[in-house]
Image 1 (cartoon, one colour):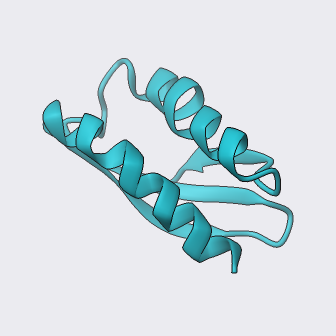
Image 2 (cartoon, helix red, strand yellow; image 1 turned 135 degrees about the vertical axis):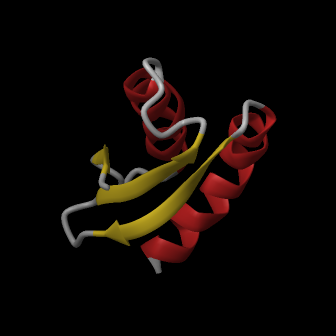
Image 3 (spheres, rainbow, N blue to C red; image 1 turned 180 degrees about the vertical axis):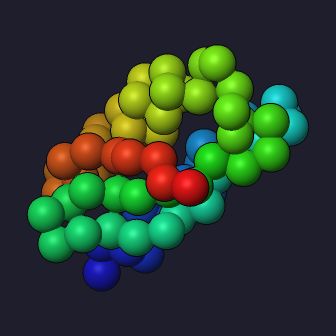
Length: 75
């Protein structure tokens, strides 16, 4: 299932985020391939959060899972 595959990829991203005092939580994966995540810790509200989300998390998910169309942050 796609949700489990997304979680496995996020496990690869987490150490880098945690090194900077942040983290990411998987909230949902839609049937259309939109991944919803919640940024936590230092990542929440960080000026670079959108860049981390798009250039880091989304890029890695799209590279490893062709079904992923986009990643969005939710509160």
